[in-house]
Length: 639
Image 1 (cartoon, rainbow, N blue to C red):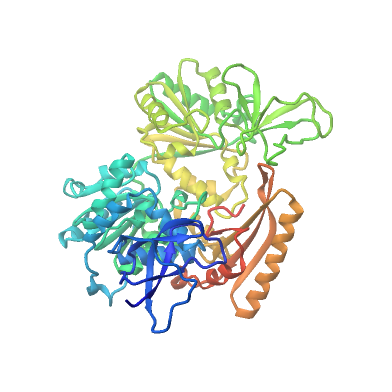
Image 2 (image 1 turned 30 degrees about the horizontal axis):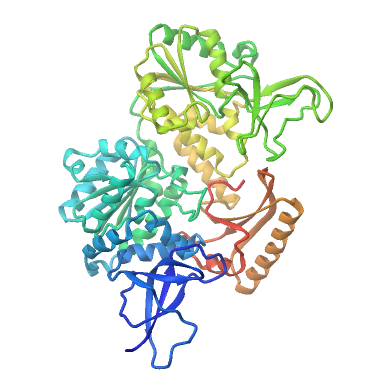
């Protein structure tokens, strides 16, 4: 019997720069993407078959035989396999970890059975390219539904990707009755039902799959259309665990593999979409507003505009009073949870920081007492406010920043008759908590919801007044996309206000151009200015960013390791004639978390629009950046 070599990808983490592909011996013919069990060290792991080789020469004696076959058939459609390989290369993540992220938690025996239903490859699309379209504003679902109906009439499937699980239901509600009958939601189900749905997708026809994150890897064949809803939402990017992929970029790569249509949509376009489809999107900006809504910018540097030390303008308080008396409802957006962003010494202006994280403590009122406490948002350490300043010995302290609990305290003094609801990371911990607060607020007259940005994904009924009482706090983080994120936040807040209502924005920097463009509803000017600034400073969408981070208990060691890496990157740049810029090393914005110092290097790669999904630079980084460093491609934050 002829022995053959089979190359496989074990479903486990194998650190850089080691290969994720290993060779074994077998006397069987195994199909690519079939699943086998292989010995690996002292353990055994499922492994995806990549390819087979037959040699006339004797096989190397060190090759081990595979242990068993889990599935003779491919467990992934070809396009999913190709997409996962792209994710591994583009996001510089070991192949085994990428494949495991999709197959983990699944009953592999049931997957093997379901995989028999994978249809043959549709070769009729081989000479076509993906077609991109853009749909923004409140009418976008009309275009979605028309395109979906067209694809279903051709017996094709449709994939709709959303940034959060909650948006699955919202999107489903906006489909036409005929389309809705064909829709299934992936993440909104319990684990067992989700598993059963995943298996059914192998043989699905004329199906609309709505899902977040992992849905882009669903075993759905014959996809005619991919819709990326809320495309400028930063939650499309997974940043806390590997693989750190962006659903939007990954979906575009999938569309290129499948040669299918793709629609980018949402309330507002991303800067990337504007650069790719300028004229159509600017026409969207020029359309008249669909509802009358006044945006009022209030300058708090004018003491006449401010009520005592409460940081609310008299006009804003008058508006609140009128609405509360009429039984109306109000939402106020806060940049921070808690009592205040921090505690400062009045004498030396030193801000009290967490010793383990070098981040400012946030001020909170204890649930079981009226005593204030300082809590670190990063490691959870809790202390009592100090009696004296460690820096100067002073004993006078003042809270800085205006956070949700303090806003509630102030407004309760002005409007004791109003029902005040808090919605932030401290007051709502579970989905049930969130739903309860929103339901109560929606049905309560004379109510005020004080919330952080997390509330903007909830189903909030239209309110009479919306406000950001300390907008400057949203712009204090020095990230390249801070203004774009704020603009998007304000537009989403604006969408919650009734026709004839008011959106109030309070600031100590009323001269900021972003506020003027918002007040004038001049979206076109904002995006043109922002793009011009990004172009001059070579920020995305004109460059691709790669952030490399190291952690170490010794700050000097963290710094030195990145200096050496930067030197190696410079050598790589010259030897390969690559077009990129190295920024850093520089300390993280929160320099220390859990006693680990964090330092970054940022790479700006200059790439053409048509080449943004390429991974030539990533291939080089895979070889020289060891597993001691964390790599984040196109990070949402450079801090």
